[in-house]
Image (cartoon, rainbow, N blue to C red; front, side, top):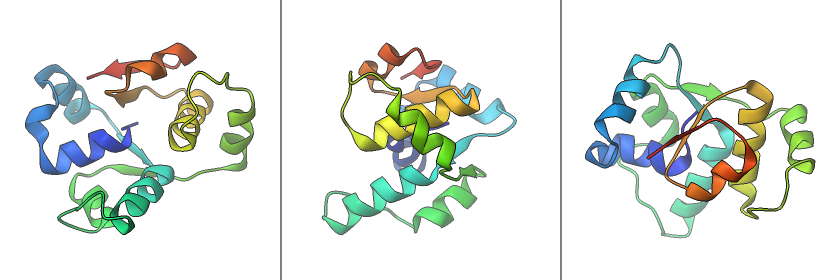
Length: 121
């Protein structure tokens, strides 16, 4: 599962993603993008903090990524996360990774504190 910044880099600056990580992304059977990522990116766009070259749904389709919906189990899993990190978007991504037994691809070194499998950029 890709963290929000990785989704943007994949689309706009793929050179920021190390070759070994890009290989893992490209060779994976499925690469997930959470609905929370679309929410975070949409908020950043509406605040003028981010410009995307295409709508988020088109970006996900263009890169053959798989949408991961947010479920009640994901929301409940947030409750059990320690408060190492207070960002609500990251906390929901972590919960989804835990519930779904997914590897999270991220540049955020703080997220490794949660015991979630991380592919670090």
